Length: 426
Image 1 (cartoon, rainbow, N blue to C red):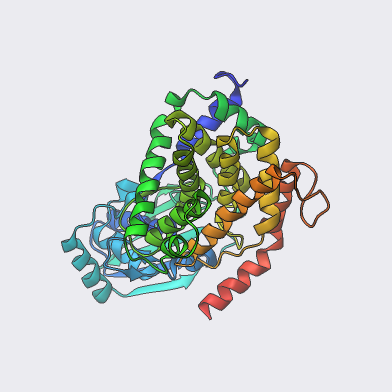
Image 2 (cartoon, helix red, strand yellow):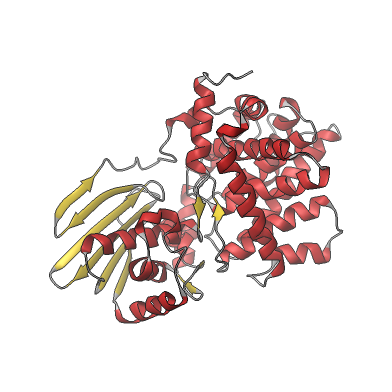
């Protein structure tokens, strides 16, 4: 049993604190808005012109998604305009959470009046945002690299105000603690963690993410994948788990102004890791503590998988979260290490390789598929079925299979990522 003095215990608590952050809107456009708000703050005036240079993956993830609190504007220029005209840089990923209707009009006027040049940055960084703001003789520059709030450079009129070493080109996370994650350790932690050590951040995830799922089912967002599932399939917990998770993405990708709690820098992953687990916990009538432990398990399994893949790639991150959710569902049914490990391996064998072609309405359908694979992975175990080491990318042992998937996504899909970006920018 993991003790509080164990280095892993402290690391796992810290990972949850650092990962489970509230965010308003899809996190890549919000990071652009955050950079623009900082650039305006440093400039000291409202910008008269903006230059924005971003990595291909940022272009991919911002191109099609609606920026919340903008009146349904889309894209990098809209995200930057929102941050520059109405953003609160101090709020970081909630930079435009409190934009008023009057400020939405300010954003539209700014977008119409301010020339905004968007280009692809010449950088090996997968996650890179550079914004230069100009007003009269003054200028400012902000660079974010590696992950959404990692500001590595600030300049005013050519003077460097702040600089730190840029994230490594293949950096997936700012936290070395993630190397301590194992499925065995995560299960031990979920079983024994003093919930008061993590209750605030995990309860916020449960509350925020379930709320946006309900909004997605009640409203009209994107392709309404959640509603389609409930309308066209039998009403059982398996369908509800997929539908509620998809509905959260329906809403978030299509302009809903409710915040979510993210995992691995992604709201879709934060919802996929938590909402199906909440639905099953309610169905099974488990107490709130058991639900929280299951969500913790799902979150950390998601982070563990993503630490080998990277923040952004051609590999759909919802797959990792769907596998995490399947493992947590097995846990809710009383499953231990064997059940959870087989669930993860089975699920990864089914859906690894689903591509990420940016944030948009179809993410909800991919989430439904990821959750379905997680549930099927557990159902296979219950029926005594499994995929064996040597079956494709599956190796004997859950850690080896997770490692294989990380290699596939991080190395094998590099060229795929380039082709996706080329097609999207076509």
